[in-house]
Image (cartoon, rainbow, N blue to C red; front, side, top):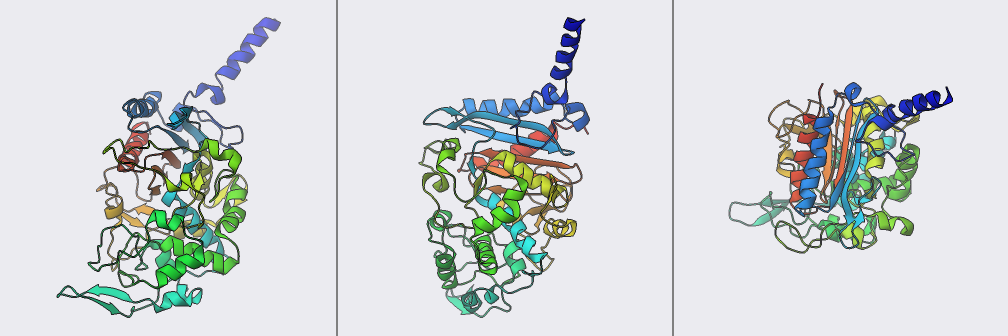
Length: 429
Protein backbone atom coordinates (compact mmCIF):
# COMPACT_ATOMS: atom_id res chain seq x y z
CA UNK A 1 0.00 0.00 0.00
CA UNK A 2 2.87 2.36 0.78
CA UNK A 3 4.37 1.73 -2.68
CA UNK A 4 1.01 2.42 -4.34
CA UNK A 5 0.63 5.64 -2.34
CA UNK A 6 4.14 6.74 -3.34
CA UNK A 7 3.46 6.06 -7.04
CA UNK A 8 0.18 7.98 -6.88
CA UNK A 9 1.93 10.88 -5.12
CA UNK A 10 4.72 11.05 -7.69
CA UNK A 11 2.22 10.88 -10.55
CA UNK A 12 0.30 13.80 -9.05
CA UNK A 13 3.50 15.84 -8.81
CA UNK A 14 4.65 15.06 -12.35
CA UNK A 15 1.26 15.92 -13.84
CA UNK A 16 0.61 19.05 -11.76
CA UNK A 17 0.60 22.39 -13.62
CA UNK A 18 4.07 23.22 -12.27
CA UNK A 19 5.58 20.14 -13.95
CA UNK A 20 3.25 19.39 -16.88
CA UNK A 21 4.19 22.50 -18.87
CA UNK A 22 7.41 21.72 -20.73
CA UNK A 23 7.68 25.31 -21.95
CA UNK A 24 8.36 26.88 -18.56
CA UNK A 25 11.67 27.16 -16.72
CA UNK A 26 10.58 29.35 -13.84
CA UNK A 27 12.88 31.10 -11.36
CA UNK A 28 11.91 30.21 -7.79
CA UNK A 29 11.06 33.79 -6.87
CA UNK A 30 8.82 34.55 -9.87
CA UNK A 31 5.29 34.84 -8.41
CA UNK A 32 3.36 33.52 -11.42
CA UNK A 33 1.69 30.12 -11.16
CA UNK A 34 2.47 27.85 -14.10
CA UNK A 35 -0.38 27.54 -16.60
CA UNK A 36 -1.79 24.40 -18.12
CA UNK A 37 -1.77 25.00 -21.86
CA UNK A 38 -5.36 23.95 -22.51
CA UNK A 39 -6.70 26.30 -19.84
CA UNK A 40 -4.40 29.11 -20.99
CA UNK A 41 -5.56 28.83 -24.60
CA UNK A 42 -2.26 27.76 -26.14
CA UNK A 43 -1.27 24.67 -28.06
CA UNK A 44 1.93 22.74 -27.43
CA UNK A 45 2.45 22.50 -31.18
CA UNK A 46 2.20 26.27 -31.51
CA UNK A 47 4.64 26.97 -28.69
CA UNK A 48 7.12 24.49 -30.15
CA UNK A 49 7.26 26.73 -33.20
CA UNK A 50 8.91 29.35 -30.97
CA UNK A 51 11.54 26.79 -30.03
CA UNK A 52 12.02 25.81 -33.67
CA UNK A 53 12.30 29.41 -34.81
CA UNK A 54 15.04 30.29 -32.35
CA UNK A 55 16.85 27.00 -32.92
CA UNK A 56 16.98 27.83 -36.63
CA UNK A 57 18.17 31.41 -36.08
CA UNK A 58 20.86 30.22 -33.67
CA UNK A 59 22.01 27.43 -35.98
CA UNK A 60 22.37 29.96 -38.82
CA UNK A 61 24.41 32.14 -36.43
CA UNK A 62 22.09 35.09 -36.94
CA UNK A 63 21.71 35.62 -33.19
CA UNK A 64 23.53 34.12 -30.17
CA UNK A 65 20.33 33.37 -28.27
CA UNK A 66 17.24 34.78 -26.66
CA UNK A 67 14.65 34.57 -23.89
CA UNK A 68 10.87 34.65 -24.36
CA UNK A 69 8.21 34.93 -21.65
CA UNK A 70 4.42 34.71 -22.03
CA UNK A 71 1.88 35.27 -19.26
CA UNK A 72 -1.87 34.89 -19.76
CA UNK A 73 -4.59 35.25 -17.14
CA UNK A 74 -1.82 35.89 -14.65
CA UNK A 75 -0.22 32.47 -15.26
CA UNK A 76 3.10 31.64 -16.85
CA UNK A 77 2.55 29.95 -20.22
CA UNK A 78 6.07 30.08 -21.62
CA UNK A 79 9.47 31.08 -20.26
CA UNK A 80 12.49 29.61 -22.00
CA UNK A 81 16.08 30.52 -22.75
CA UNK A 82 17.57 29.65 -26.14
CA UNK A 83 21.19 29.52 -27.28
CA UNK A 84 24.07 31.29 -25.58
CA UNK A 85 24.44 34.60 -23.76
CA UNK A 86 28.11 35.18 -24.56
CA UNK A 87 29.61 34.20 -27.94
CA UNK A 88 33.13 34.54 -26.52
CA UNK A 89 32.70 32.17 -23.57
CA UNK A 90 29.84 30.09 -25.03
CA UNK A 91 28.03 30.50 -21.69
CA UNK A 92 24.45 29.24 -22.09
CA UNK A 93 21.53 31.65 -22.12
CA UNK A 94 19.50 31.65 -18.89
CA UNK A 95 16.01 32.93 -18.21
CA UNK A 96 17.59 35.45 -15.82
CA UNK A 97 20.22 36.67 -18.29
CA UNK A 98 20.61 40.45 -18.17
CA UNK A 99 19.95 42.44 -21.35
CA UNK A 100 20.51 46.07 -22.27
CA UNK A 101 16.87 47.20 -22.47
CA UNK A 102 17.48 50.36 -24.53
CA UNK A 103 14.12 52.02 -25.26
CA UNK A 104 12.22 49.53 -23.12
CA UNK A 105 13.42 51.94 -20.44
CA UNK A 106 10.86 54.47 -21.67
CA UNK A 107 7.65 52.76 -20.44
CA UNK A 108 9.20 52.41 -16.97
CA UNK A 109 10.19 56.08 -16.91
CA UNK A 110 6.69 57.05 -18.07
CA UNK A 111 5.31 54.99 -15.20
CA UNK A 112 7.68 56.70 -12.78
CA UNK A 113 6.52 60.09 -14.02
CA UNK A 114 2.87 59.08 -13.59
CA UNK A 115 3.49 58.05 -9.98
CA UNK A 116 4.33 61.73 -9.47
CA UNK A 117 1.33 62.88 -11.51
CA UNK A 118 -1.05 60.90 -9.31
CA UNK A 119 0.51 62.61 -6.29
CA UNK A 120 -0.23 66.02 -7.79
CA UNK A 121 3.48 66.71 -8.32
CA UNK A 122 3.90 66.47 -12.10
CA UNK A 123 0.88 67.65 -14.12
CA UNK A 124 0.92 66.58 -17.78
CA UNK A 125 0.33 70.13 -19.00
CA UNK A 126 3.14 71.41 -16.80
CA UNK A 127 5.92 73.14 -18.72
CA UNK A 128 9.41 71.62 -18.96
CA UNK A 129 10.74 75.17 -18.64
CA UNK A 130 9.38 75.27 -15.09
CA UNK A 131 12.07 72.70 -14.22
CA UNK A 132 14.75 73.78 -16.71
CA UNK A 133 14.25 77.42 -17.79
CA UNK A 134 16.90 77.10 -20.50
CA UNK A 135 14.65 74.67 -22.38
CA UNK A 136 12.06 77.43 -22.63
CA UNK A 137 14.55 79.51 -24.66
CA UNK A 138 14.90 76.94 -27.47
CA UNK A 139 13.89 77.99 -30.98
CA UNK A 140 12.39 75.93 -33.82
CA UNK A 141 14.46 75.31 -36.97
CA UNK A 142 12.51 75.82 -40.20
CA UNK A 143 13.91 75.14 -43.66
CA UNK A 144 13.02 77.90 -46.13
CA UNK A 145 12.28 77.39 -49.85
CA UNK A 146 15.74 78.69 -50.75
CA UNK A 147 17.37 75.99 -48.61
CA UNK A 148 18.38 78.22 -45.72
CA UNK A 149 17.36 77.45 -42.17
CA UNK A 150 15.62 80.05 -40.04
CA UNK A 151 14.97 79.95 -36.30
CA UNK A 152 11.47 80.73 -35.12
CA UNK A 153 9.97 81.10 -31.66
CA UNK A 154 7.89 78.12 -30.48
CA UNK A 155 4.16 78.72 -30.62
CA UNK A 156 3.88 77.16 -27.19
CA UNK A 157 6.17 75.65 -24.58
CA UNK A 158 7.06 71.94 -24.35
CA UNK A 159 4.87 70.13 -21.81
CA UNK A 160 5.37 66.97 -19.78
CA UNK A 161 2.77 65.30 -22.03
CA UNK A 162 4.86 66.27 -25.07
CA UNK A 163 7.83 64.45 -23.57
CA UNK A 164 5.80 61.33 -22.83
CA UNK A 165 4.25 61.10 -26.31
CA UNK A 166 7.28 62.29 -28.37
CA UNK A 167 5.72 65.56 -29.55
CA UNK A 168 8.29 67.85 -27.93
CA UNK A 169 10.11 68.85 -31.13
CA UNK A 170 13.29 67.13 -29.92
CA UNK A 171 14.93 64.32 -31.90
CA UNK A 172 17.77 61.76 -31.74
CA UNK A 173 21.11 62.23 -33.46
CA UNK A 174 21.74 59.86 -36.34
CA UNK A 175 18.09 59.70 -37.36
CA UNK A 176 16.81 60.82 -40.77
CA UNK A 177 16.50 64.59 -40.92
CA UNK A 178 12.73 64.55 -41.37
CA UNK A 179 12.35 68.27 -40.73
CA UNK A 180 14.62 69.17 -43.62
CA UNK A 181 16.78 71.31 -41.32
CA UNK A 182 20.44 70.50 -40.60
CA UNK A 183 20.32 69.26 -37.01
CA UNK A 184 23.11 66.70 -36.81
CA UNK A 185 24.22 68.11 -33.45
CA UNK A 186 21.66 66.05 -31.52
CA UNK A 187 23.41 63.30 -29.52
CA UNK A 188 23.24 59.67 -30.62
CA UNK A 189 22.52 56.78 -28.26
CA UNK A 190 26.20 56.05 -27.67
CA UNK A 191 26.87 59.71 -26.88
CA UNK A 192 24.01 59.78 -24.37
CA UNK A 193 25.42 56.71 -22.64
CA UNK A 194 28.72 58.50 -21.95
CA UNK A 195 27.33 61.85 -20.75
CA UNK A 196 28.08 62.84 -17.17
CA UNK A 197 24.48 63.23 -16.07
CA UNK A 198 21.24 65.14 -16.53
CA UNK A 199 22.88 68.55 -16.18
CA UNK A 200 25.22 67.93 -19.12
CA UNK A 201 22.35 66.53 -21.19
CA UNK A 202 20.06 69.50 -20.59
CA UNK A 203 22.87 71.96 -21.31
CA UNK A 204 23.68 70.21 -24.59
CA UNK A 205 20.09 69.96 -25.76
CA UNK A 206 19.00 73.46 -24.75
CA UNK A 207 21.69 74.95 -27.03
CA UNK A 208 20.15 73.21 -30.07
CA UNK A 209 17.03 73.97 -32.08
CA UNK A 210 13.78 72.02 -32.03
CA UNK A 211 12.98 70.14 -35.24
CA UNK A 212 9.23 70.83 -35.05
CA UNK A 213 6.82 73.05 -33.23
CA UNK A 214 5.91 71.38 -29.93
CA UNK A 215 2.70 69.35 -30.11
CA UNK A 216 2.58 69.00 -33.90
CA UNK A 217 4.56 65.88 -34.92
CA UNK A 218 5.36 62.49 -33.36
CA UNK A 219 9.14 62.47 -33.69
CA UNK A 220 11.01 59.70 -31.86
CA UNK A 221 13.39 61.59 -29.68
CA UNK A 222 15.41 62.40 -26.58
CA UNK A 223 12.12 63.37 -24.92
CA UNK A 224 12.50 60.60 -22.34
CA UNK A 225 16.04 61.64 -21.49
CA UNK A 226 14.50 65.04 -20.76
CA UNK A 227 11.66 63.42 -18.80
CA UNK A 228 14.18 61.56 -16.66
CA UNK A 229 15.94 64.86 -15.98
CA UNK A 230 12.60 66.39 -14.95
CA UNK A 231 11.94 63.48 -12.57
CA UNK A 232 15.35 64.05 -10.99
CA UNK A 233 14.68 67.77 -10.58
CA UNK A 234 11.17 67.16 -9.24
CA UNK A 235 12.17 64.51 -6.69
CA UNK A 236 15.70 65.59 -5.78
CA UNK A 237 16.79 61.99 -6.41
CA UNK A 238 18.72 60.20 -9.11
CA UNK A 239 16.52 58.51 -11.70
CA UNK A 240 17.77 55.08 -10.64
CA UNK A 241 16.94 55.75 -6.99
CA UNK A 242 13.45 57.05 -7.74
CA UNK A 243 12.49 54.22 -10.09
CA UNK A 244 13.94 51.69 -7.67
CA UNK A 245 11.88 53.07 -4.80
CA UNK A 246 8.65 53.62 -6.73
CA UNK A 247 8.62 50.64 -9.16
CA UNK A 248 11.48 48.15 -9.16
CA UNK A 249 11.72 47.25 -5.46
CA UNK A 250 7.95 47.05 -4.85
CA UNK A 251 7.56 44.75 -7.87
CA UNK A 252 10.55 42.60 -6.97
CA UNK A 253 12.51 43.62 -10.09
CA UNK A 254 15.85 42.85 -8.45
CA UNK A 255 17.89 42.72 -11.67
CA UNK A 256 16.65 45.96 -13.25
CA UNK A 257 18.48 49.27 -13.07
CA UNK A 258 20.98 51.59 -14.71
CA UNK A 259 23.95 49.83 -13.13
CA UNK A 260 24.73 46.10 -12.97
CA UNK A 261 26.48 44.86 -9.81
CA UNK A 262 29.89 43.29 -10.47
CA UNK A 263 28.67 39.89 -9.28
CA UNK A 264 25.87 39.92 -11.88
CA UNK A 265 27.86 40.99 -14.93
CA UNK A 266 28.54 37.39 -15.93
CA UNK A 267 24.81 37.08 -16.65
CA UNK A 268 24.87 39.83 -19.29
CA UNK A 269 23.83 38.80 -22.81
CA UNK A 270 26.21 39.93 -25.59
CA UNK A 271 25.82 40.13 -29.37
CA UNK A 272 28.13 38.69 -31.99
CA UNK A 273 31.12 40.97 -32.57
CA UNK A 274 30.18 41.16 -36.26
CA UNK A 275 26.70 41.91 -37.58
CA UNK A 276 25.59 38.68 -39.29
CA UNK A 277 23.82 40.66 -42.03
CA UNK A 278 26.70 42.79 -43.26
CA UNK A 279 29.81 41.63 -41.37
CA UNK A 280 30.39 45.05 -39.82
CA UNK A 281 31.52 45.40 -36.18
CA UNK A 282 28.74 45.81 -33.64
CA UNK A 283 28.53 46.21 -29.89
CA UNK A 284 26.18 47.28 -27.12
CA UNK A 285 27.68 50.24 -25.29
CA UNK A 286 25.72 49.60 -22.08
CA UNK A 287 27.46 46.22 -21.72
CA UNK A 288 30.97 47.42 -22.51
CA UNK A 289 31.23 50.40 -20.17
CA UNK A 290 29.38 51.57 -17.07
CA UNK A 291 26.87 54.25 -18.02
CA UNK A 292 27.64 57.66 -16.57
CA UNK A 293 24.18 59.02 -17.40
CA UNK A 294 21.01 57.39 -16.07
CA UNK A 295 19.21 58.31 -19.27
CA UNK A 296 15.45 57.83 -19.23
CA UNK A 297 15.29 57.02 -22.91
CA UNK A 298 17.43 53.92 -23.05
CA UNK A 299 20.17 53.28 -20.48
CA UNK A 300 18.64 50.63 -18.21
CA UNK A 301 19.32 46.89 -18.09
CA UNK A 302 17.16 44.04 -16.87
CA UNK A 303 15.77 40.55 -17.34
CA UNK A 304 12.71 39.05 -19.00
CA UNK A 305 11.23 37.82 -15.68
CA UNK A 306 11.60 41.32 -14.20
CA UNK A 307 9.87 42.95 -17.16
CA UNK A 308 7.07 40.38 -17.01
CA UNK A 309 6.36 41.68 -13.50
CA UNK A 310 6.26 45.26 -14.77
CA UNK A 311 4.05 44.50 -17.77
CA UNK A 312 1.66 42.39 -15.69
CA UNK A 313 1.33 45.28 -13.25
CA UNK A 314 0.06 47.43 -16.11
CA UNK A 315 -2.38 44.76 -17.35
CA UNK A 316 -3.63 44.37 -13.77
CA UNK A 317 -4.51 48.07 -13.70
CA UNK A 318 -1.45 49.24 -11.76
CA UNK A 319 -1.02 46.47 -9.18
CA UNK A 320 1.02 43.28 -8.96
CA UNK A 321 1.59 40.77 -6.17
CA UNK A 322 -0.07 43.01 -3.60
CA UNK A 323 1.88 46.15 -4.54
CA UNK A 324 0.07 49.06 -6.21
CA UNK A 325 2.20 51.31 -8.41
CA UNK A 326 -0.44 53.26 -10.36
CA UNK A 327 -4.16 53.71 -10.01
CA UNK A 328 -6.33 51.98 -12.66
CA UNK A 329 -7.23 55.35 -14.17
CA UNK A 330 -3.57 56.33 -14.46
CA UNK A 331 -2.88 53.09 -16.36
CA UNK A 332 -5.79 53.90 -18.70
CA UNK A 333 -4.35 57.38 -19.24
CA UNK A 334 -0.94 55.89 -20.04
CA UNK A 335 -2.14 53.16 -22.39
CA UNK A 336 -4.61 55.10 -24.53
CA UNK A 337 -3.71 57.10 -27.62
CA UNK A 338 -2.52 60.69 -27.05
CA UNK A 339 -1.91 61.65 -30.69
CA UNK A 340 -4.75 63.92 -31.73
CA UNK A 341 -5.85 64.35 -35.36
CA UNK A 342 -3.83 67.56 -35.47
CA UNK A 343 -0.59 65.68 -34.67
CA UNK A 344 1.27 63.99 -37.52
CA UNK A 345 1.50 60.30 -36.57
CA UNK A 346 4.87 58.81 -37.51
CA UNK A 347 4.84 55.78 -35.22
CA UNK A 348 5.08 53.41 -38.19
CA UNK A 349 8.19 55.30 -39.35
CA UNK A 350 9.92 54.00 -36.22
CA UNK A 351 8.20 50.60 -36.06
CA UNK A 352 7.35 49.66 -39.70
CA UNK A 353 5.21 46.66 -38.71
CA UNK A 354 3.03 48.86 -36.47
CA UNK A 355 0.95 50.76 -38.99
CA UNK A 356 -2.43 51.53 -37.42
CA UNK A 357 -0.89 52.38 -34.04
CA UNK A 358 -0.95 55.63 -32.13
CA UNK A 359 1.09 56.49 -29.07
CA UNK A 360 0.12 56.85 -25.44
CA UNK A 361 2.49 57.85 -22.64
CA UNK A 362 5.63 55.80 -23.26
CA UNK A 363 3.93 53.04 -25.27
CA UNK A 364 2.58 52.51 -28.79
CA UNK A 365 -1.16 51.78 -28.75
CA UNK A 366 -3.06 49.76 -31.36
CA UNK A 367 -5.97 51.74 -32.81
CA UNK A 368 -7.25 49.38 -35.53
CA UNK A 369 -7.48 45.59 -35.90
CA UNK A 370 -5.97 45.66 -39.40
CA UNK A 371 -3.23 47.64 -41.17
CA UNK A 372 -0.33 46.36 -39.00
CA UNK A 373 1.82 43.43 -40.10
CA UNK A 374 1.16 41.60 -36.82
CA UNK A 375 -1.99 40.19 -35.20
CA UNK A 376 -3.46 41.72 -32.07
CA UNK A 377 -6.43 43.56 -30.62
CA UNK A 378 -7.36 47.23 -30.45
CA UNK A 379 -5.93 48.49 -27.17
CA UNK A 380 -2.76 46.37 -27.26
CA UNK A 381 0.25 48.44 -26.21
CA UNK A 382 3.95 47.87 -26.62
CA UNK A 383 7.46 49.12 -27.15
CA UNK A 384 10.84 47.73 -28.13
CA UNK A 385 14.54 48.30 -27.59
CA UNK A 386 17.24 49.04 -30.16
CA UNK A 387 19.40 46.12 -29.02
CA UNK A 388 16.82 43.40 -29.66
CA UNK A 389 14.34 43.48 -26.77
CA UNK A 390 10.61 44.13 -26.73
CA UNK A 391 7.28 43.67 -24.98
CA UNK A 392 3.60 43.84 -25.82
CA UNK A 393 0.53 43.64 -23.63
CA UNK A 394 -2.97 42.73 -24.83
CA UNK A 395 -5.56 43.60 -22.16
CA UNK A 396 -8.38 41.92 -24.11
CA UNK A 397 -6.49 38.62 -24.06
CA UNK A 398 -5.15 39.32 -20.55
CA UNK A 399 -1.70 38.57 -21.93
CA UNK A 400 1.79 40.01 -21.66
CA UNK A 401 4.80 38.96 -23.73
CA UNK A 402 8.44 39.92 -23.17
CA UNK A 403 11.32 38.83 -25.37
CA UNK A 404 15.02 39.63 -25.40
CA UNK A 405 17.88 39.03 -27.80
CA UNK A 406 21.28 40.66 -28.19
CA UNK A 407 20.75 41.78 -31.79
CA UNK A 408 21.62 45.48 -32.19
CA UNK A 409 21.43 45.46 -36.00
CA UNK A 410 18.43 45.36 -38.33
CA UNK A 411 17.63 41.79 -37.27
CA UNK A 412 16.05 43.24 -34.14
CA UNK A 413 13.17 44.53 -36.29
CA UNK A 414 12.68 41.08 -37.78
CA UNK A 415 12.47 39.47 -34.33
CA UNK A 416 9.90 42.01 -33.14
CA UNK A 417 7.52 40.99 -35.90
CA UNK A 418 8.23 37.26 -35.79
CA UNK A 419 7.78 36.88 -32.03
CA UNK A 420 4.38 38.55 -32.15
CA UNK A 421 3.32 36.32 -35.07
CA UNK A 422 4.56 33.21 -33.26
CA UNK A 423 2.82 34.02 -29.97
CA UNK A 424 -0.58 34.85 -31.45
CA UNK A 425 -0.15 31.93 -33.84
CA UNK A 426 0.17 29.54 -30.89
CA UNK A 427 -3.14 30.59 -29.33
CA UNK A 428 -6.26 28.43 -29.49
CA UNK A 429 -8.74 30.99 -28.15
